[in-house]
Length: 230
Image (cartoon, rainbow, N blue to C red; front, side, top):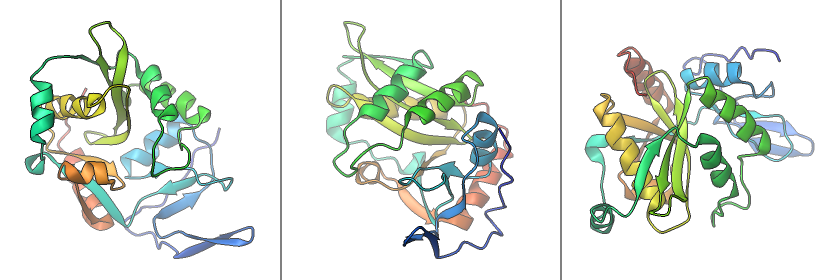
């Protein structure tokens, strides 16, 4: 597998449209297409603020969005109902105990705003390898019967956590996984994490969008702190 020479997103000129077949696609968020979905390329991409997100049958698009969604922990909003649910201690939480199971469940989760999943079998395989390499991480939520009922996974981009996906099998399990993750990251010195693309769910928690340039500067500044998140 060959390494992708990603351009610098700060200086790259993003085209407005690209043509594939008979269709033009909005490319203002895409820094490049194609190349291997490998551990090496993922490591290189995430540390530069880039991530893969497949679209149909076109060569793999690599994204660095014009508007980037992040969650500043100081601006976190926890709904009262969720805080109350957390105090019930109905679940137990672990980290990196069942990464493969978490990403598999995320790939199978039904999402009303999406017709399918971007977490293909190839993604599951490669991100599991990335986990074994120490860069991808998961939080697991367990029931009293020791069943996996929720979780979240993402990538450590050199001291900045990039959230990828969540799933739940019982109400609030994924949201409580997120709260557990944030507490962990705070304890490690983090003050924010990357959501990549805004969702209504994350907006309710206080997430916001910033410009590409602001995000890349923030990423570089935080990476320079040398935080050990996991």
